[in-house]
Image 1 (tube, rainbow, N blue to C red):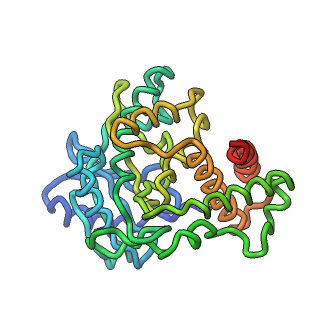
Image 2: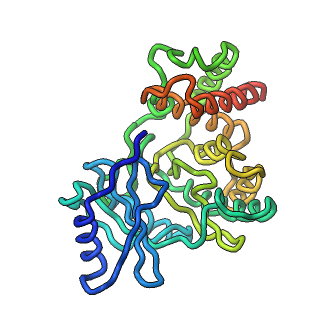
Length: 316
């Protein structure tokens, strides 16, 4: 996916004046990470803030402001939204400004595995609180403003479960996954259908080591709620399992689960693995729909990981 173009400097300057006042000196730079979402880092003296611009014109980031406020009220270490507008005509999007979570992502932290495990364990406590929040429906959360509880795009679990999967199964997946792996994936789908969640729970949606922040070996918070959705309770743990060891040599899922367990009983291992397989499968299908070919490195890597995870789920 191509990186979204920079926003007009004049529109960003006007936004900053409205948020901080005309007499406050603020400078900014675009962060290198945002692709579909444009994010800017603001510097006001010694303070750092972040501007997030909604991906779509009909998204209202007041939804995110409400969520962040409620999570902070529950003790979760997430950024504070200090300014939000439902729609900025100059940008054609809703905008929000948040405080900084100190430090750097665990994915980029130069810390030994033992320290990384401690950070992941502490993050697991916050994740457990996030995942206890109920959502009305499954799939992408609808950003419609400050209403509560949150509502998602699908009313039933089945539509979320099979979203982005080929209607004419297995479609393009046949060129990436062997017959035995496809059979295992089908059994994973059947098993998930047999155990639908009683209610959708809030999922961070993109929870891996890039979302966990730390400073001097200490956990400081969770960032980037741009992909929030209603999902099964194991969704975030499954997503983390899917990506575990991609950016760090240490396996961190056990530490994350240990922290999670101090707050709430985590889902069992087969449920986490099923969620990992299904999350990877939907992601893979989205990439194929975008025109990424079967030889794309990311496509090959994801297919290999799905194959690795799918078989153990069935054997258990």
